[in-house]
Every structure is written in C-alpha cells, then in structure tokens.
Image (cartoon, rainbow, N blue to C red; front, side, top):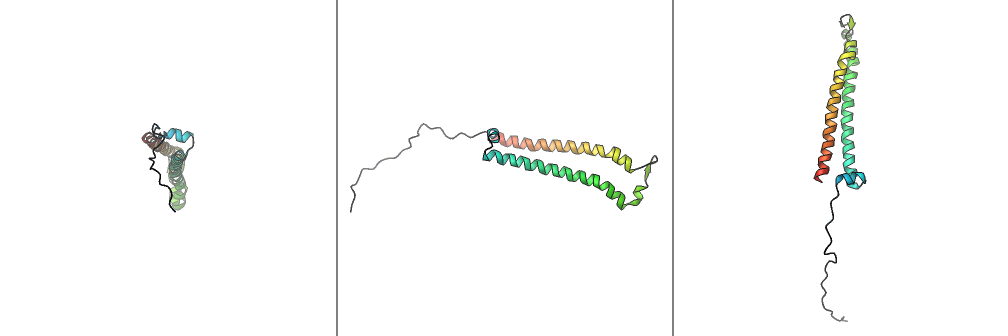
Length: 124
C-alpha cells in the first residue's frame, strides 16, 4: 500500500522577529524569590552563620579560658595587682579591647561577604 507522494514543505520559525530571552538582574531574582535568588541568599546566610559561629566560638574560648586557667593553676588565683586579685582587672579592663577587636574583624568580614554577593550580582 503506497500513499500519494506530496511535495516537500520547508518548516521555518514563525518567530523571526522575536528577541532573545533577557537575563534577569540578581537583585530582581532576590526580590522576586526566584530559584537563583534563593540560592544566592542561602549562600549569603550560610556564610554569615559560619562567620557568627566562628566569632562565638572564639569568644567562648577567651571568656571560658579565664576560669579554666584559674581552675588549672590555683597559684594564679593568688596573684594580685595593687592589692586586687588579677582576675578582676583582666575581666574589667582587658576583655573589652578583645571584644572591640573581634567586633571590628566581624564587621569587615561580614562586609566582605556582602561585597562578594554584590559582585556576583553585577557579573550576572
């Protein structure tokens, strides 16, 4: 059984004048909560959480280390400066510059993380 043979037909796109798909800015993806925007946002949050946990662990070691030092070295408890046990000047004076230094480091690191996201948004 043979079918009648028809002439060949050329198939072309009906959308000749159509423009190519536009790339969306990352800021739009973030605001509209698209898949790409959520990936970038999740990465930013993960980096900030990691940074916060590092700072928290560092401060816990510094502040937790002082009582451990006095528990391990009982002779350190009897050390006095101007008639005051040395633990009080350490806790009252020396800890605050450490806090300020850690806060400055954290601020710079968090800004660096946000700049990386901004740079990725501009590249995209």
